[in-house]
Length: 300
Image (cartoon, rainbow, N blue to C red):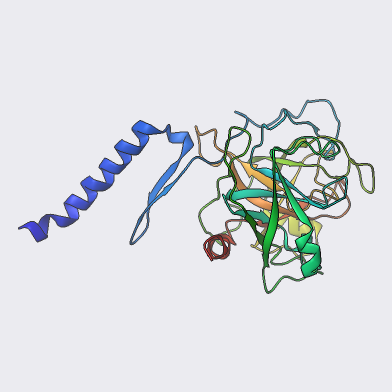
């Protein structure tokens, strides 16, 4: 009799875990789900503004965006080389010791270059270098099949030390479940952000910029890029708005679940044809496609 009741007890235990944890934390501050052999409890992630920036905000940059409220996107980080005044790429916090970025930000780096890389956390003004915490990079892992010409497999994970001290201004982004399905986020409003050029080969802003774009179907993006877009990528565009040089590796995020204010990183800024060209969307590496790969290097 007891053996027969075990599956039911497991269900009740799982429900009890839900009730206990959600009585401690709001639903939006964590995520609990069940796999074949485990109950997974993810802590607070995806903290950010309640809604995407309005598209009518004054034009300033990312291209065509506006200045973000300082530390309103607590998961974005800036990557710089020691002694340099501006960031060369961005990234996102995915755990206390891991940063997600693009392979093309780091694939040409030597061991010495990596030893001089600094991760700025809780930063708003790159010129003033007002990062609240900084970390050195101890290890760089990028996808073994990264192709610099096509930007396929444009994903990398950085290991930093010591672990990050989370605060209201520094916390991780949420990641989507693993999926190779294209277009699961198509037509959603998405937020792009970074410290990159204000226009193609233009000047850099001092402070973090943000803009709202829309994720478009891969078929539409393929029509723009002559069939070179695969299901390991996604595209986003909006009139006059785009990521640009220096925004590489930064996150593109959506509010993935109805009624939730948590932000999920669906892409990593990868490439584009110019910046904010009318007929060319920005292209991003799909985080859902690479989720299993990312998970491997979050724990090893």
